[in-house]
Length: 270
Image (cartoon, rainbow, N blue to C red; front, side, top):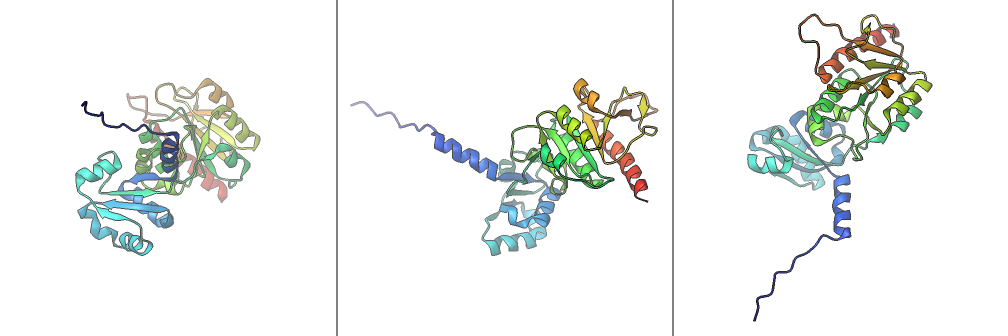
């Protein structure tokens, strides 16, 4: 009598649908500042908490909340935390939370921002570390929204980008744009000044005429701004430098540009 082959089970459409739905309803957040900021701003979004032994004393309030709301929480060793976070840069804490939604850019354009408000748009910048670092600067300078390339995800950014933002994801709305050129056209129709960062631009950041509200557009470090996006800009500016290296990391450039725009917008309030 031949041995029967073990049964194998294929994932059904319903299994895949449930997995997809779960992914849309849950977001793995890690990194101390990112997690603390999420709990501070929206504790009701917390679904599960994992932490290292060294972090346990600092999480008394969070653990008390979990106990009260019957939310699972567990202390894990380093290897287990690495698995939960799918990486090693969790800083001893991982939270599974409900994701912040990423709206279409049309919601931003149809809405209203303060007279001296600022928005940042990314043209082809999909590196999560750069996205996260830029999002952090946006939060620091009170930017009203970050427009990113359409990725089809619910949150618009990855867990890695959220960690790099150091809590900035909680305070800066993120918007998806499937066609940035068209989105910038809509911004200009609202009277917003579109400023493109271009290292080859003739105009210096310090001398360029910029009005507010303003949209700062940043391109990736290889190709820079696309031609279609450049044509939508009211002005193109470069950051003057004196050293032999004539380029900046895009997230560093974003911080410099936002500092200058913030200085001008603050001056205009007086």
